[in-house]
Image (cartoon, rainbow, N blue to C red; front, side, top):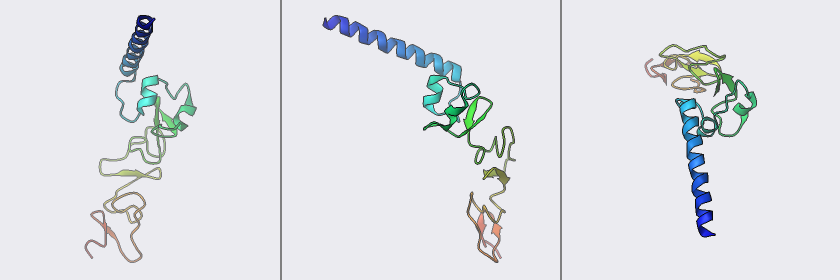
Length: 126
């Protein structure tokens, strides 16, 4: 009886490993996709609600991947809209964090009245 349980356990482990390996091959890079979603090989173009699940990398579906269009540099504001090299995506808009007064040095970092953003710091050089 013990041998039968052991054989069943080994068979289940082998089956799980084969499924995970196949999912990894199908998913390719895990960049921008949660590990749970990649292992399950569920694509958001077929199941868009999966992007709103816990562990998802964002609530929006762009090119079969869950992303956050409010912060993703490759899909800023909408799918496929890329920010320039020196820009970051803040609230769906590409901004330069070195000079932008409302996003100085990072998203949401506002400079005070009468100051300006230089090199990502408020009032660095007046």
